Length: 385
Ligand SMILES: O=C(O)CCC(=O)C(=O)O
Ligand SMILES: [Fe+2]
Image 1 (cartoon, rainbow, N blue to C red):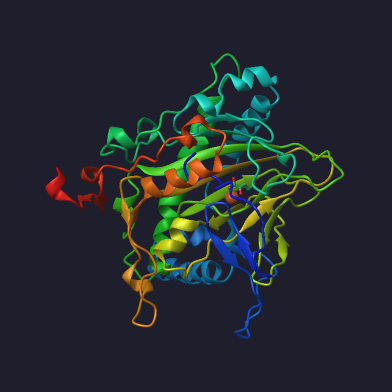
Image 2: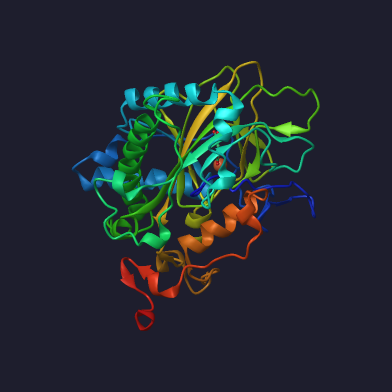
C-alpha cells in the first residue's frame, strides 16, 4: 500500500555495523564520532504552533522539527488538532474488523488487488527473515480523490488506486470511520509539510502543489501478543518507510512496542504518550533532502499479554511528481547523491519487494509513462504529450 512499511528485511550483517534492509538499502549504524551523542529518546513537539497566524511561531516550530529530523528521524507530536473522537471511532471499528473470522477477512485479500490494498493475514510478511515472520495482520486502503474535499481534481486516472472494503453490513460504519480519520490526517499532513518546507529553508508553500492528490494511504494493524518463546517471530521486522513521512496512532499498552534504531546500534523504545501521534520521516524525504533528514530504521515487538493496534498514515507526494534532491540540501562539498524519481516508480518498486507473496510482485515493474510526469503540476516532458 502507499508508503506502507517497506516490510523490509533481513538483518544480515556484512560488517559489524551495517544493517542490510530488503530493498538493497543499507544503513550504517556506527557510534557517533562528532562528539554529539546518538539519541536515547524520541523528542515530543508541541505542534499547535503550526496553526499560529504568526510566522515567527511557525518558524520556531520548524527549528525544532529540523533538529528532530536531522538527529532522530522520529518525533511525537502533541496538540495536533485531530479530534480524539475521530481517533476513538477509527480504533473501535478497526478492533471490530480484526475480530471477524479469518474467512471473512480473507474475502478482502490483498492478493486480488493490483495495488496491494486490502487484508493481509498474520505472518504474510517476513521482514526479519525469521522462521515464522511478522506476527501482525493488517488492512490497507489508499487515497481516493472522491474523498478529498481539498484536492484530487487533477489526478490522472492511471495513478488511481482503488481500495477494497468490507460490505457495510459486515462491520457497519467501518469505511466511514476510517475515511474520516484519513481526511483529518490528510489535513494535518498538508499543514505539517509546510513546517517541513520552513525547516528546509524553502518558501512555506513549496510542497503545496506536490500534494494535491498525494499518496495518503492508511494501514490498520493488529499485533496479537507473540506466542513463541523462541525468537522466530517479531511484530514487524526492522525497516524504513517509503514516502515523505508517516503519522502513527497506537493503543497504549503496558509494554512499549515500537523501537527505533539509533546510530550506536541500540534499539530505543518509544514510550507513546496519550494524545500524541508518532511521526517518522521516510525514505523519499531522506532522498529528497540528500540524506540530511533521516529515515530511521524501526521495528515493532509486542511483549506482554495485550493485543496492540496501530494506524499508520503514509504521506507522500502526488504519484506523478518527479522528486529531485532539493538545492537547499546540496553544496559544492555535498553534491546531489540521487537522480530524480517519481513517487510512483519509487513506491511501486518498494511495495513489490515487500509483498513478495503477491502475484503482481513477480511481474516486470511498470514505470509511469513520461507524459504523466510533472514537477509541481507542470509536465516535465512536454514533447511526450
Ligand atoms: O505499528 C506501528 O507502530 C508501526 C508500524 C510501522 O512501522 C509501519 O507500518 O510502517
Ligand atoms: Fe514503519
